[in-house]
Image (cartoon, rainbow, N blue to C red; front, side, top):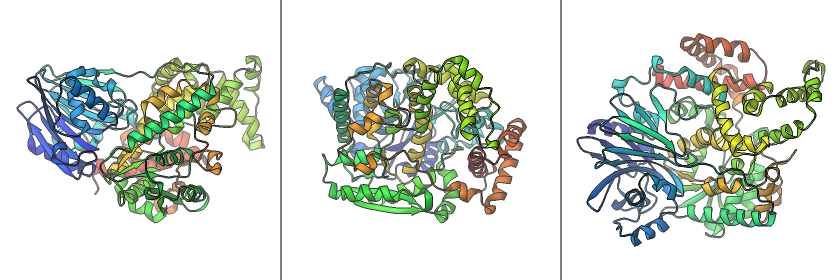
Length: 616
């Protein structure tokens, strides 16, 4: 796990500045490679082969050709690939997966990534063919940002690396992408390929990019496609396959030359991972980590059940308002574009705590997106059921004049559901959710509908599975939860590995019948059968709870009113139309929607001060 930087011209000092900007990602080693055409920089967090043989940028030679790589991530199946490549005549000087990537590139070309099981963002410099080959893993666990204009191509693991090129004046008010800002306020994050700045982009998950160093042109394509829905109605077979896959995914992610621990939240996903670790490591020696919240948000009861059940070396702490206040300044540095998942605050504290004992921590991320774990997936199932009601009845009921003001909340909700059920499938997500009080103004509707079409093609005639695929590929996971965990963990040089993010789980999920994922009331139905003897019964049957601190109680207090006022002024200065929309449609309401927007506005305001106004 590391940080990577580079560009298509020679400037060693600039490479050093970029390395310094993301030094937190790799405090164990630093390197620079350069020739007349390119400069690469790298900061290393040593995980596998801690010796100097793992130094990057790494140069590899084969049959008279040479290639150079900077790589962030882990290729979990590299031992098997290494053995295969040795049989084909390749030799290795280190025990690293980095060297295996380079040999695989010589053997398989751009298709080498199809042979990898892991998380990665890498750039290979091929001087013979005068090109950069860039790639990001299938689900987007590891980030890769790039700037491109007519002459320059600059890349980094984080935006802050690219922003060190001060002569470009990227982080200026004039360079803010208003469409991207709109997406942030609507979604809570800025999805790939957008960033908050024009001319700076994220390489999308499952995407390759080749930059021609002579022509100064680039080509992008998706190297991986989620397979189509093909259900297997054999529960015993699916349970056995799911259990075997979980065991193998955990086994692969336990390989490291540094201490490995695990997050233990008291939810079914992380608890299943810890339960599986018992097959590969003495559980009494395993360090586990959790964060609790005071009052109604606290999950410590279930965390205690899990840690007592496993008897791990457990570390638990609470996240309170003083922790929040202490991290406000750091948050906008760690998340260097507006990022509205405020559970990033306690994730920072959790990562800092874990780093005191281990260098690698396993997590349960991805379980919800694979097995159907969100309330929206249950809602999708209900919508599928609702659409079976004769259309004439739904049209009639959608016109009932019911309002919550008259104590008819359930009737009004059903009315809204009937209205949403009338939309065409391609417009369901972008149009139905506003009916449930979520704003999707302007460009966000188009963005959502285009991606929903992909999920409709991959899914079945079941909104629950379509929404699950949407969250897996575009919504909750790649640019939201995975960004949260990557930045928070790497801020403290902690590597997080997630067994449920093994791409084989994505393919496995397409064989699970949609109705075996969620039903009218229950989520993760098949998963509970797969892990039933791994976790305590209380956790197995509990409902989904988010990792949610009481930020709305804190941010909406009087002490932050001036911060929100200032953030409103920043937004108005940037774009009057966007400001007017949110002021009229959202901020004046007393609702969950208004509260969520104020939190995004607070985070935006602090980010704007840090990177645009440049208040330290």
